[in-house]
Image 1 (cartoon, rainbow, N blue to C red):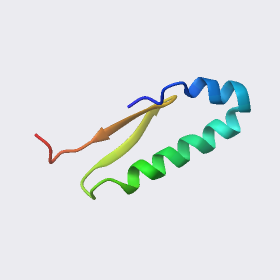
Image 2: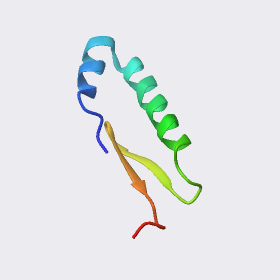
Image 3: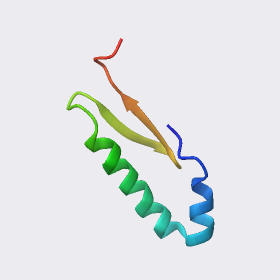
Length: 55
């Protein structure tokens, strides 16, 4: 998953705001997952969702 236009946030308000946004997004996404799923940030504004129970 990729956060569209994330660079605009960093450029306009700075990396500290961008970092806080990444944490907030990750927390919100994690709250929606089942215990068997794993969410990880793979770099920049990109996340990966591991869902082994899905086929």
